[in-house]
Amino acid sequence: MSNALQCDLARLVARVEREDGPRAAADPYRQRFHLMPPVGWMNDPNGLCRCGEWYHVFYQYGPFDPTGGVKHWGHYRSRDLLRWEKLPPLLYPDQPWNIHGVYSGSALVENGTMYLYYTGNVKFAGDYDYITAGRGHNVALAVTHDGVTVDSNELLLENKDYPENLTCHVRDPKVWAQDGKYYMVLGARTKEDRGELLVYESEDKRRWQHVNTLTTPDLFGYMWECPDLFCLDGQWFLVCSPQGVRRQGNRYQNIYSCGFFPLYGDFRSDYTLGAYQELDCGFDFYAPQTFLDGSRRLMIGWMGMPDADYTNPTVAYGWQHCMTVPCELRRNGARLLRWPAAEIDALRGTRIAPEQAQVFDLECITSEKGRLVIRGAAVIEWEKQRLSLTLMRGGAGRTVRYADVDALAALRIIADVSSLEIFINGGEQIMTTRYYPDPSSCGVQIDGAAAEIWTMGALQI
Image (cartoon, rainbow, N blue to C red; front, side, top):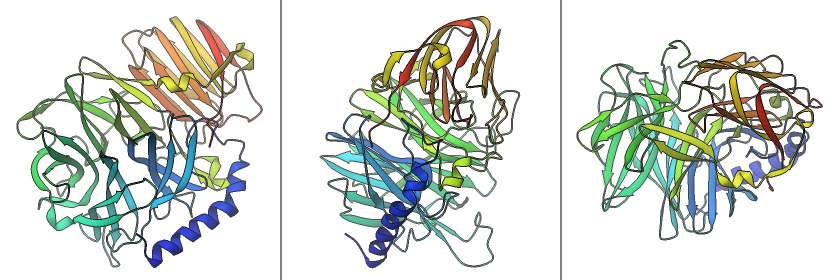
């Protein structure tokens, strides 16, 4: 199914990828084992799923502008999470209900068919604040049987279909099947600037009824983006990205947070949200999404941060941002642990000496006090119950972030050309950041830890 606008956009995207791709590929900060846009801009992961033999990663893609631009759904697929095929965008801003961007959403897989729910963005011309008026955030559904071509694309819900007390900001549908029905959660912002999640129910995947609203008794941010609601080992968790949460000590250090609430009771009726916990306390982690892969639940996040006051020098080469490595979620009581998926271990090569490390996977057992210096640019220090990440150079405006821990026992650091993912105590806390050391620099200085370091191979794309 296509129209004239989609055909024109497809030709334009192919042209810009062909013409600007070599410049992006020549960037010395291009990553080796993280998914990136071929050109332009990348943000939220969308429609993550496994359908048949294929894993699918869609993402917010602005091919014409490395600082944003109108959003498409870019597309990668893989059979093993290691060898990836880049496909043309699956969804284009080519319908009246998504003309200013195909915004974030999720995938429901049934009988080999992918039902892709997304937010269609429309900005009306006029003197609007685009919060209380002037914006359409529409829930739409695209269906594909092969993951490559769209068979149908239809509008399901508009702003007039949401509860009356909301602003125009209602977006990011996450849909799943349960108990013979279908459920959807949507992030929302009320007219009183309170963040909440709407719960919808359907029997046919197309007609939806609002059945509940999830929020906290006290105000906790003005908007809850990118919701995800799932059960893991008998415990329900609500993942979201709250905007407008003020910093409290070493909590909520970024402009926007990202974390989870344990949910008790029934999300469709009586429920209680437990204490909110952040998923990451580094500089660059936002809008993650999970999906089931057999018995395990995998998560991929956007390695970026909207509206941050730091930058990425890759813009000079015509591209920006990447995804995290896929991680498996595990439950520890009311906590979520995040750990690199087993497939990432297959990228490990030979063990190397610390002074040789540049792109690497490091595991270490820590002493009570210690310090790591990575490529002369990033410093990780810990003592007693606090760990810090300081970017001395190459931070592009990033300075320092902190993690409070009960007791530091172990670290795993996955370092790509221009990123660090630091897993603390088996994934109890994580610090994710982009960084930009001298491209020729290498070496890890280690004090207060016994470490093993492996080289890392590249994804095949």
